[in-house]
Image (cartoon, rainbow, N blue to C red):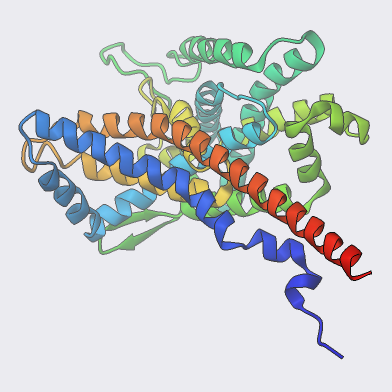
Length: 385
């Protein structure tokens, strides 16, 4: 009696961890990064700079402890921004309003942190909940408009970004969310948050490592668990792939749209908290702009996967942190970092399409080979009979 073959008993497991699937999953982002490096190298060489010197400066700074701490701190914020965008993308919802959602959430969190002073174990969760509630409620507007009025979430979230700017301008004035001043300063900001609102940090040889990195990691773990181990995650992925099929299987698509937008906005509400609770401790007119749109790029590079987003966030943080030393060491233009990030996004779209077509072709070849093998086996049986 022959022993059972584990691979044959569990074909799904073997298929999931097949080498070809892993290679195809990694091929697109790797090709995008390599092509971006090549393009930026040509641009640097054209401008009279040695590209190898630039990459050497960046890699050398990244190998130092202060560079590593800076990359981890920056990637914490980037990961949250990408996770907020990716959650909507998995539902086939384009939440372009992450930019406005995190700013409004950070404003209210800063106001509450300045006005309320409770013990830290109560104060910090209060600020986290405040930011998530504000971000989720603000994002729910786009979800409700899509469900009940058929308004595209792309249009509504873009408009909500502009409205968020107006809301901040309306509230962040002396006497409302900003303290009353004599008017001698041009910078308007909230009062500093209370000492109990400061999130814990770890002192290392390279500087202060933000403790909020654990919150970002927890968001990623919960994201992955909900996506792959819960009924809600199954409904989310099913609705994202085909609303009609999801409806036929009993999924309330309208409810899923609203919930997904709320959850995406709640994650977006956390984006500004690392800066607020660990660095600046107040909300001002120039509070960390552009994180929402950057998160979309990182989510795209990470293929909307919590693990892929982590690597993409580290890559973009590496480019920003190490790129800041380029003008100081060798006179390299800092703009080369923005060029690299832009080319990565463009190249990854092209690379994903090429890899998708190659994967589809390989799948067709495998199916053809299996059908041919079955036909040959059937023919042999008929001959033997």
